[in-house]
Image (cartoon, rainbow, N blue to C red; front, top):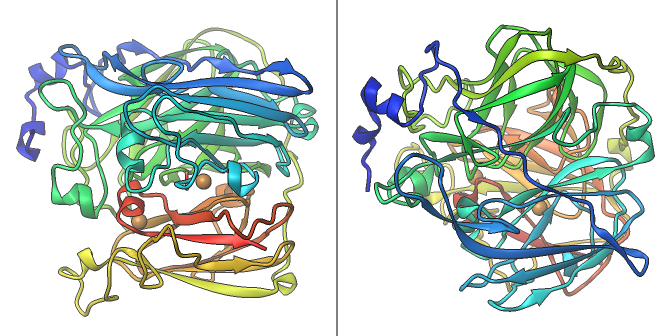
Length: 490
Ligand code: C2O
Ligand code: CU
Ligand code: CU
């Protein structure tokens, strides 16, 4: 196993590995891989999608290859695309030698087809969920393994992909939407490698407490990537697909990021921001506007508030300051592109006065109690003092009710809190309005150390007293350690 000292590579080693320091002048080496687009084929009134989960080998770095998992390929999965109103029929075949699940993160579907820890697909088995796409709005969702206590490891190995949902309203905006041309997925992940090429995982105390932090960035499974831009405007669909690393995204040329979308919908109008903090499982959509010949690097900058302080240093980085490139965007000759409207969509919202109740969820972790004085909370890594138990239903929500969920972070680390089934609006964070880029529909929200976030949502359409949905921290090491609970809609 590597120790942290081994990451302090000399310049020649860094060059050999294709790593560049944040300040280096060298250019990115590898063209960005684009996941295949899967649009489904018509089959008796439904769109049929065939997914095969299997083990493979992937060459990320020079040297030995990495044993990986993937869906319809060796690492990650295809981008599934459909429209609101479609009936979707998925066939998920598990060719692994271990059980797995696939969860449709951000989708509003019946609990039985949600793909959480209860919908286990044994080796050799096929799971066939089928549902109507009842999403309120066009959205940038994703899918990933969600096996009890093994989500972190299975996602690390590669079980994740994007799930794009379009609708009339979003199509009418004429945003860039030619997949792989001016509509580009960016799945950002961080990884560490063992000398034999395998992913290193859970080898340090930091992995278990702070969560897994890698020293190599992968974008769609590409190390040190660049993308040749072909149009004057490009839409980037960004997923933080990392187990636990938080990114603070920005452009290296100081220009604003133009954010047009959040997890579960576009924004009402573009938000122009120097920095966007993106926690695990959160998504943003960006529009990048460039001139011919221009090169822009999308960077990650140090996390200021609620720093995950023990962040592993990026390979080749100049200092432990956590400033490193995500992807280089190069514009050659460019085809012209239409403008981005200043008015995008109307985002559903609920008035707090409509809420039937407020529920409080306090996030706690005993493993941090050694550092915190006095102890913030006794007990295991959990929510409201309890660790995840698949046999215990924590919350019953009446069908059709509007509720406020208040998430309180009683720990010294940030936690991205995720709720299945619904898309919510963020009401406030410690009483202050959410960031402009958080003002769309969302299903995951960052709750900083010691802070309090309120979200509001309606629990519509699907009641099932037996099959639960999950709510949890989307730091996958925290989730696997028990920071998760279950609710049913009745
Ligand atoms: Cu992205 Cu419960 O998951
Ligand atoms: Cu989810
Ligand atoms: Cu957490």
